[in-house]
Length: 142
Image 1 (cartoon, rainbow, N blue to C red):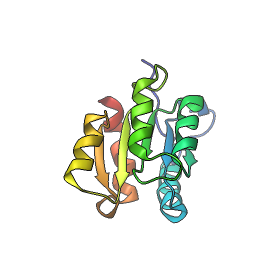
Image 2 (tube, rainbow, N blue to C red; image 1 turned 30 degrees about the vertical axis):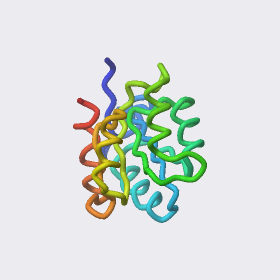
Image 3 (cartoon, rainbow, N blue to C red; image 1 turned 90 degrees about the vertical axis):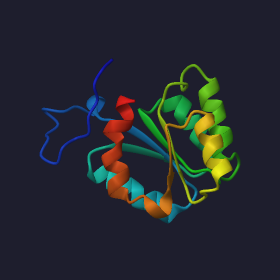
């Protein structure tokens, strides 16, 4: 398995190519929340693609095959649990780590997300951009 990393603050293009970067897909319908997490992840050296709804998130996951996906639950066009179910059903996206990032913390939603194959279920109100960024390397090892 090839090893990808984030670009460290001092890394130059000569020492670390774009192909070496960890690709993140962030699926979130709230533009301000999306921007907050995107900015931190990019500042920490991750390559970030975004989607504002479930259908676009599913399409981008298939087209881009990111290294990790952060997925909201309540999304327009297709909810996050349906996106997760479809990701797990497709050969190309089946093994991509998916971390649910939601404001909803009802036990049944959390259990359903984990049962469908999410690696973790995080609550936005308790998840800073820094903690999200710092968790990526561990989630990629799972």
